Image 1: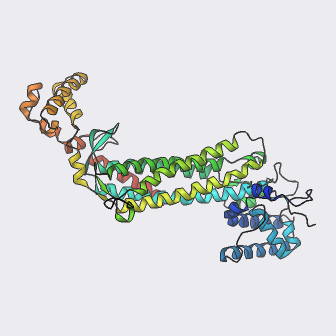
Image 2: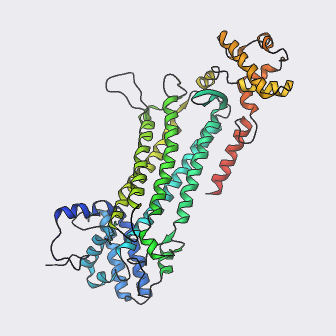
Image 3: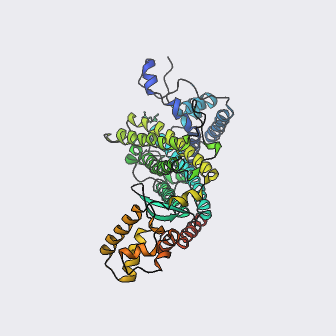
Length: 462
Ligand code: ARG
């Protein structure tokens, strides 16, 4: 009976159930590019070090190139009984080129091979997600530029609090996604070290050159300690955490978009291209996209917790539990990329109903804090006293069914005689917004500053 390529001691054919449980080929086939690239770099290094011949190197390289072509053209469907992508490619290579194919695995184990392939994959996806984030940030900046004078009620506890402008609100999200971008990039830099050459766990007696493979594959350097390297899945946990945090931001925005597109608010209208209907209620236009984005956040959080849980009790070094690292990462990465793209497109095509936003500012006495600040500045009143006086003003406005900005000077003076004509400008919502000129504040001038600073940052990372 032919020996299974990775089972020198195992005589009988594996149980079908074992194969179903054990084989990762059905999902880790996604890593074929990384596996072929890693093998080519490893073979080049082996030949350079005189561990395999140059003839073997050229058969290996040609064979691997052909296999890549077969996969990409669809002539090899990446299906079959192989245990994983690594064994599948090695097996196919050996069936094409014979003994040279069997020499490829010198000074290498699947433990460092899978650590390499998966890390390369994660690094590449990190870069892809980062570029999508930059595009998303520029969409927020574009919307912000058009709305630095569009008033809306800023809220706390989902209650009207103080007037802000919509550009400022958009720049809050731009700032969140900038942090996400930076988090992805710092993970990239922290993990940009090459696992290959660590072999099973302890290194190898062959005279390999890990610097060479690291540099061929675009890593900064080889990793420091091989035992750690084959045991480490922090890079996978980091991309999962980074995606979860980013999706949490997307989810918070989605929640706002859902509220804002409801009849109660109608501050925005999602384009028909991004709305769905109801099967029974002909009038409905539903915000399914932001609802799904909010829902997908639960799913990526699950992937993060799953891998944290897989890893938490494992002794060093490789354990097969670690094969459970991949599907969650593949799923989170696909979810993240699709989510950013769909969000970006939807934001670019939504309508901002500026007048509805502005009208909403006439509810909730948004300039109450401004009146208190006026009394502090004008009359030298302690803030806490001013706060209580404004409480009485608000009660009066409520009795009359008005917003405090609509009260007459007489009414205001009936509560505090030192209030003068110049209060009217203070109570106006637009003045209130523009009065918040402290650094990072909402005043149009400060919002424009934030836009400019974000733009300078975007130029700096081009
Ligand atoms: N398919 C395995 C995984 O994804 C590859 C590593 C297997 N190594 C081993 N010693 N069994 O984790």
